[in-house]
Image 1 (tube, rainbow, N blue to C red):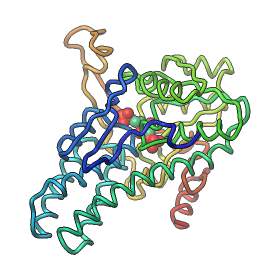
Image 2 (image 1 turned 180 degrees about the vertical axis):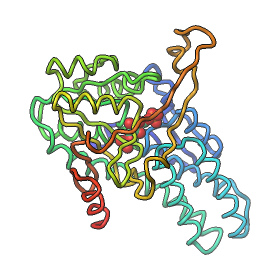
Image 3 (image 1 turned 90 degrees about the horizontal axis):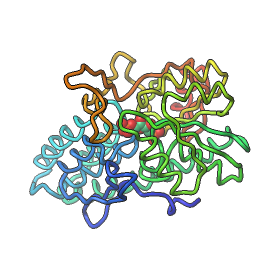
Image 4 (image 1 turned 120 degrees about the vertical axis):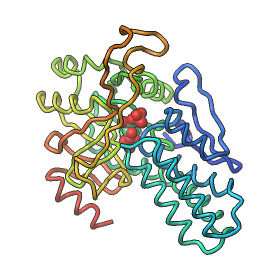
Length: 348
Ligand code: RUB
């Protein structure tokens, strides 16, 4: 399938940012248009746009709007305006490292430019290039990763690491798309991904949209499907991967990896190099905690008593010993990860 057939999550059009409003899916496919970086920050915070690479590029587009919004006539003044916008965009979500990556890349471009006009032009062009590259990276990753999957495989995935988590095509779902395009017959099992159902709302929607065979299961049926031989392989995305191979991804990923180990099912992660954090240690990573109402109800319907205490972390950490391989745009790394990830970055 060509990239044009898949959904375009976030795009730069006529000096504005156009996004699919993912909070409305799967019922309504609606696009929203923003001309102010504060609107983009709100969109990231409220999950209008979500998924690690998509929020990285959205952050970059937020700064591109900021350069156009500012009336600054001096370089220092414009950089100051951008630093403030960067702070607001950065504070929207803490776990996916791609957001910091996208913002830092744009700030570097701005600082290296000489005049105010040059900054405006270079920042917008760099952000557009990052969006285009995101799709190319996912397509390369898909092609590389497809070698790991066989004809008639049933592949489990969690959350949404698809076109909707990126600018287009997807990471984990990009690998699935490329596997199908290579002529192999595959099926996908998507977990619904409570509490806000990125699996049922987004992954199931996206795969059906593209004509890929998909079966939806409740998160609680992961063990059942594995124990009954209904799953051959697993591929998920990531919000952050440490140099040690610790993988941070949507809450529930850890228990899937544990069960995969128990049933001897390969557990793969697909993520671009922009998802790697080569500096942090596990204790440095902030796990986003989200509001209780996501757990005490489904959509607008209340499903728990008033005043109940809730723990609602958005992500968990899967330790390297549970990961069979990490698929990137520059190749697949296998354990021991500390060594293979170091080599991957040394070669790039
Ligand atoms: C998204 C999530 C996804 C990764 C996918 O969580 O956990 O699996 O972001 O990233 P949320 P990638 O919906 O809360 O943003 O596409 O890099 O694999």
